[in-house]
Image (cartoon, rainbow, N blue to C red):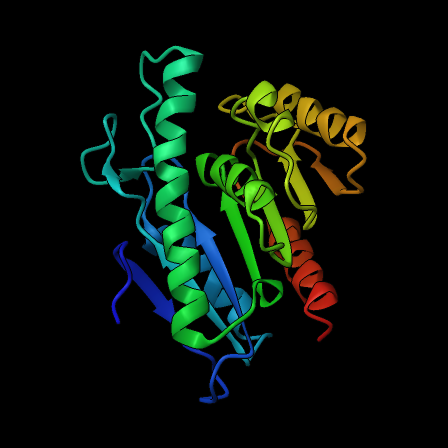
Length: 218
């Protein structure tokens, strides 16, 4: 079978059937190739894991060569939520395809995301009935706290990381998410990177790798 989203796949280095999977969701205006750089680093240390880096489903309104999970330009919060729900359905479909193709249970799947990809990973992962192993979020936020508070279905392991100098998705978004999860009795891990803008620093990729190893029990 082929996946419903155009995807870069990094097969396990062990050449065996994958024992688990990590899905990486790129940011607004990016593509699967962008986020595959992070996957390549992790893959060297996780030889039985398959890494799946989809392109978001829409051409980006602000970057003709890139993609978007949903439109962010001149949208009301209600429009953003509505469009994010469409993207969520598409990501859910792909997660289900991965489960079927590789015969993996939900607890052997981690979703990671940067920026808009983080926003979607949080919303999708927490609303799924089959509890995913973990969500790794970089430089994102909760799309709509009111909507998510009414749709808290599962409690995967979560780590959120953010740069303190981020001007694209400000640190306030990180603090809001941290408060939201605390109020809703989620135990999450967090990390603020000093003197860091809107990007994943080396420390962030290392922490992500440690988190994957811990929760896949590797």
